[in-house]
Length: 433
Ligand code: UD1
View 1: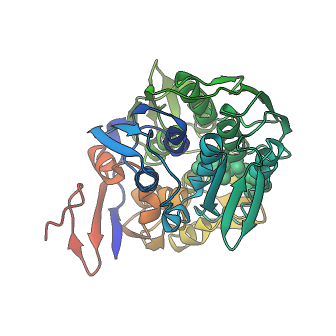
View 2: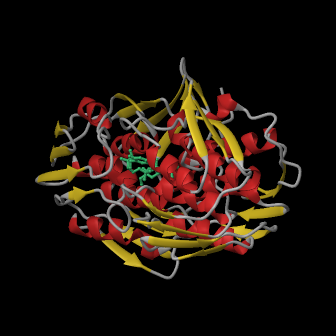
């Protein structure tokens, strides 16, 4: 079994470059299915969720050409729904975007119910509500989602989302792009990756307006054409390095970011005494000698992102005073707290609220990555702890962080990947003993 082995205590110093945004890439790759031509996608992150979606597209008949490590070309001219790889679809959350993309291009779709991190119940009723309003007939049975249209196409409509949902907003946007007529999505989510998906679609010939506000208007077009698009930098990867720099009392220049997307994280870190300086496409984070408490409430964008909640939780274990986190999105996103407790953290959880008694000296321990961001939190805790931390289930972390070990090592962290029983590997993952 592979684990991360972290010897804590090193401050992080230096520069790190942020990769393309996972949550944009995992929507834009399925969206490439809708294009009757060749899309060149730049700044694709090298993470397992993106790899898995590219494999799914290959099964569906797309031809994928690797131009360089972060640029690919997807040729979707000969796509069919014959060989859908359901076992792969079941493994990731973002496979739900295949419903919108297939419905748009073929007027029908069959996928599995989505997988992904388990934060409690994660329904897709708002996706279904949207597709149904566009004229699709959706049937969910035996773990599959079947979607069909009586006349072979979707029809624009006005859709009010009962919940602000990133996935539903993007999925309905995909489906509506090639629907007949005009669609309006109200109470839409406003995350940067929603704007990125709209920009991608528009650059391929779609007519999507208002992304980034709570009302998105889409005039359906008959066809999308090929083109080139570069994915935005990952807000959450950047935020994770910002928190890691602050928590280790280090000083890190985080490059290739959009500072505006990081404002909610920068503001919260400043409350902890951290200095965050913003430049055009980078931020410089300097951790204080002593971190101060802060209260955090996660909210849809532009609020503090739920996907940064565990990393911030790890930091608050060490901040002087009592901090309160309120999880505003998910019912069950505190599983990582049990792991932090193994390292000496004092945290009480009551429903969606967690109270961190800070100022703790964490100690290394064997811990689990309960999910992607919980895993990142364990790594941050391990970087700060006395002694050695062993993080298990690292496949979760590799779903969303490109070259995590390599980037952290370059910043001075003592972290490596090892097979247990131990067989050390270097930062490229190759065995060295
Ligand atoms: C996306 C992100 C995930 C992030 C989340 C919130 C991807 C692939 N994943 O997930 O990393 O944590 O946004 O920023 O982009 N809900 C419903 N019905 C629905 C859809 C959602 O009740 O049909 C609820 C969810 O259970 C959750 C809330 O709405 O409580 C927000 O979920 P949503 O924004 O849809 O998250 P995802 O798109 O799954």
